[in-house]
Length: 322
Image (cartoon, rainbow, N blue to C red; front, side):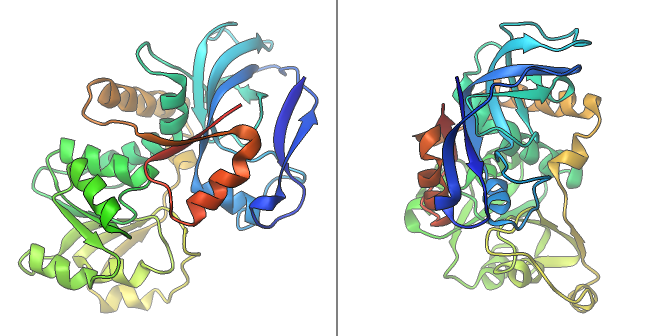
């Protein structure tokens, strides 16, 4: 027997329907994964609401999971039944069991639990490319992270500190400010403050080389106003809605750069996926970055997790248990 959360029509969390589905057989190049944990990410909300289009409807959403290999399709040589595996970026995670492309899976090293792995694959690998490749954070840098208490944000704070940067985190409540200070943030600013003015004060007018922004529409102008000339605005999420702006603003504010990166692009090649996951597992294994699974729900109650995420009531990572 196999169950999954399926979305038959776009809308609110109530559109997440728990139902019985056939258990698939792995095709050539695939393996059947029996999930032990499934990660919740904001991209799941985008697919639920229709901001991102699924290939077909009804759709099982979810991009991240960890579990055991239960069956192996033809042509798969580097995975076997019983292997502990994790993945990010393969739509269909909100299920007790699912088939996934073998070349998108990585083995979970000893010492990493299923809940940790499910919580960190998408968020952690995103943080990895953001601080290592989209912008290579250096010891002399001062950086700003919006939604710093969230899944990716809390990892970014820790990893950037590990790399020696001065980290400014922006959060919505004092409780979250205390949390990110505990993660190593040098400054914890509240969304109610004048963020560019505070950045100017902190940097003695120099402003920032880079801003990490997963909020989108509500913070886009604020992010640009925190940058020094030629600075880079990394927009990697749309929690408040998509950004629409005239590119002329980049010229007016100092010949700025903006990029909209995705994990799928940065890990499209198998070698890049393996290297990114390896770097993540190593930094977590060393203790330099801790993965905080602060909320868990039964997978059948995924709607509750979505409501909490959208209400900004979550911190760190949220994991569903099938």
